[in-house]
Length: 554
Image: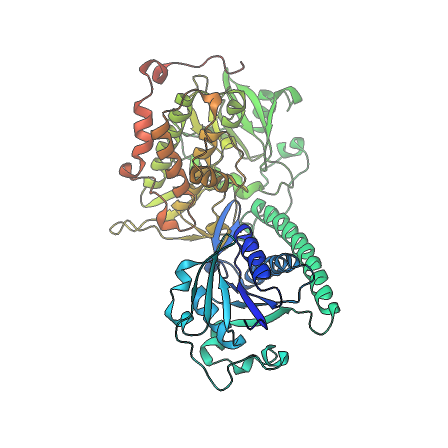
């Protein structure tokens, strides 16, 4: 048997490929081993627990991701090479979007006479069988040998080793030049130095890409916190540094306020909060501190603009404009404002945020009821005409609970209005700088700046998965998708006994909400799309539907 070289086609499944390499090394003891690999570049980039299509990424992001993929692939080939011990091993890879065509290209370019592959389906490919002898090995066991009519050419053969080193890619035909890149990466024929250098560079590159990935994540976190300052470039850049100074005169151009929205003076705000006493402080946000107050016997929550805050006046203006037009049982009610201090006065919701309540335990029936309530609030916002309203920052901490446990959607500082064509019912895309919270923000919006109602649907999908599983928002879609695929139980057991079949359907619907293809996301206003949620809501006992909560502190 001619044992000059044996070529082994390897893929990413290390368990399968390692056993096949060991088989080839044992059955061709005197042959030089040549590993060949077709690298299939992914069409998606990992992003916030999900995936982002390459068409939405910029060139720099694409280049970085391709580099990371190449580094991982080279490390994989190095690992396979080490399985062969002291044997002479070379490795070649080719980038192609069709695995079979890529393998055939390698066979022709390397003038391969025999190749070991771990795929029955590939061994049946006629164009591969015409080129060389195909040994099919599965999990380290020889299955068959296919040796159909092999096409010979004047140059078919090995000759010197230099004849198969790809120093000149220009020899490829035009199609190969357009979409393939063939490179020799591992060889020890001339000296061991080349292999050592390659391995060390691969390890170093991996470390560099890992560091770049960390920096990129940090940058995206900072970008995710940024807001649309361009729209408000004419607004003042600075504001007073103390609430006391705001007693003198309004800092900004006064807004036109509807009659049903009360206007309070700065002195009233000070009195209501006991001069902003620390005991009245109930929360902090990007906009500023939130105080509990009493205005004429009415319990209120007062959100005060933070001097030099990163959101500031633009968010105040947006929230006033949007909330003053809304009236819905599951949306926080704006009672009034103080234009001197840019303060917002809301009804006080004593049971805090949904995140707080979830950490203390919440029955599945209450979770489903809250999801149904918030779906109704989004339906109300998205159904408004001629301008639908996109919340833009839906998350557990922006869903508040009143004394009876009824949920209210709040924090409309990032909300935007988008025009809807009256006949086509087509939403016109709003372009704006990405804003929102990492873990909840729509990756397509984050990448393109195109804000649509589907952006809220993505965030709602994350909220659904959080309430069903109890998991943190970051990378939750990836975790849930993996659990569903493996049929693992991912539901939060502290919520009680879930109706398994119906809950699994809702979980899959939530994954669709987080699809990278916006068209795949269920429209929030379509009742037919949300049957899994309605079915679960119908299973809630009547006494639970109507009960009042008065023990949230437990």
